[in-house]
Amino acid sequence: MQEPLLRDEGLDYDTFPEASASPRERARAGALQNRRVFLATFAAVLGNFSFGYALVYTSPVIPALKLSSDPALHLNKIQASWFGSVFTLGAAAGGLSAMVLNDLLGRKLSIMFSAVPSVIGYALMAGAHGLWMLLLGRMLTGFAGGLTAACIPVYVSEIAPPGVRGALGATPQLMAVFGSLSLYALGLLLPWRWLAVAGEGPVLIMILLLSFMPNSPRFLLSKGRDEEALQALTWLRADSEVHWEFEQIQDNVRKQSSQVSWAEARDPRVYRPILIAVLMRFLQQLTGITPILVYLQTIFDSMSVALPSQQDAAIVGAVRLVSVLIAAVTMDLAGRKVLLYVSASIMLVANLTLGLYIQFGPRPLTPNSTVGLEIMTLGNTEQPPTTSFDYLTLIPLLATMLFIMGYAMGWGPITWLLMSEVLPLRARGVASGLCVLVSWLTAFILTKYFLLAVNAFGLQVPFFFFSAICLLSLLFTGFCVPETRGRSLEQIEAFFHTRRMSFRP
Image (cartoon, rainbow, N blue to C red):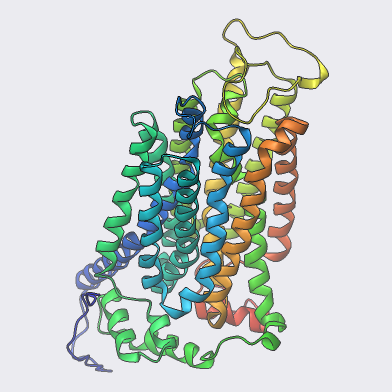
C-alpha cells in the first residue's frame, strides 16, 4: 500500500516562539488545515455514496424486472421482496465484520477493503442471467455498505477537529443521499444493467484517493504507533504545533489501552453510551426510511399521484439532498438535540398524513402494475377512479418530501454522528459494528415483511406504525440523548464518567 503523503522531517516544539504568526497567516493555515481534513473526509465518504446508490438500486429495477421477457429474471412478489431486502441482510453481515475489522485493520483499511465485495456485487448484477446473481450481487453490495457504515463515521469523527466535526459528521449521510439521488436520476436514462456498471466508478475513485490519506491518529496510538500518529495528526492539521492535542489524545488512549471486558461492559459508564447509540440506530430504522426508499417508486405506483412515479422518486431524492445540506450547516449551530426534535416531529406529521391519505384519499387511475403492493379497499368503501386532475393527488408527493426532509435534517445524519461521538474509545470499533448490525437486521425485517404487511392489512397500516415510532423517538431524545455540540471526543467520554455537564461551552 502506498504510504500517506505525510511529512518525514522532525518537529520542533518551541514553547516560546520568537514571533507569533500574523492574523492573515493564521487564517491561511486554518484554511489549509480544513482543506486537508475535508480531502480525507471526501475520500472516505465516497464509500457512503456507493452505499446510498446501492441501497435504492431496486427502486427503478423492480418495476423493470416485473416487465422482463426473460423468465430467468422475471420477478414475482416473493422474489421482489427478497431482492429488495437481501441488501440489508448483507449490510448486517458487514456491520458484524466491522466489529473485528475496525480494530484489526484500522478504519481506513477497512473502508478500502469494502471495495472488494462492492465491485464484485455490481459486476454480478450488471451481468446477471438469473435470480441468484441478482440476489448475490445485492448481498455483496449490502455487505460493503454495512462495513462502510460502521467504519466511515468513526474515521471522520477521529480526524476532524471539534469545531467542524458536526458538519463533517453529516457528510456520510450527505454522500449516501447524493448516491441515492444519482441512482434516481440515472434510472430515468439508463437500463438497469448499466445502472450497476455506473456504480463501479465511485468505488474505484475511493480506493485511489484513500491510498494517499493518513489513518486515524487515535487508531495508530491504540496500536502503539506513536510516530505515525503524530505524523498523521500533523498532516491533517497542517501545523507543527499539534503537541497539545496529540498529548491529550495520547493520554486518553493510554488510559484505555485494553479492550472492554464483559465485566466492564456492565459498568453504566460503558453500556449507557453504547445503549444510546444502538437504540438510536434501532429507532432510526423503525421510522420507515429503508422500506420507503427501497420501494419508493412502487409505493407511488400504488397511490393516486399527480406525476409519474419515476419523476416523483427523483424529486424526493433531490429534496433529501437539500435537507442533508441544511443539516450539515446547522448541526454545529442549533445543536444535535434541537434537530432531532424537529426531525422526529416532521416525520410524525408526514407519516400520519400519508396514512390518512391512503385510508381516505382517491384511488389510482389504473390498477397497480408494479410488484408487491396491492390496491386495497380504502376506508371500507369502494371509491371510483379519478377521472380528472385532483390537487389532492399532490399530497403523497408533498408528504413524502416532508418525511424525507425531516429524516435528512436530523435522524438521518445525527444518528451516524452521535454513534461515533458517544461510543467509548476502547469499545468504539466493536460497538460501532454492533450498531450497524442492529440497524440493518431491523431494516431487513422491515423491508422483507413490508410488502406482506401491505398485502395483509393495507398500505396505510405501516405508515401509522411509523408515526407511532416517531412519537417514541421524541420521548427518547428528551430523556436519553446528550448534547455533544462543541465538545471534544475526550470531553464527551468524560461526561459519561461524571454525568456532569461542566464542560458545556
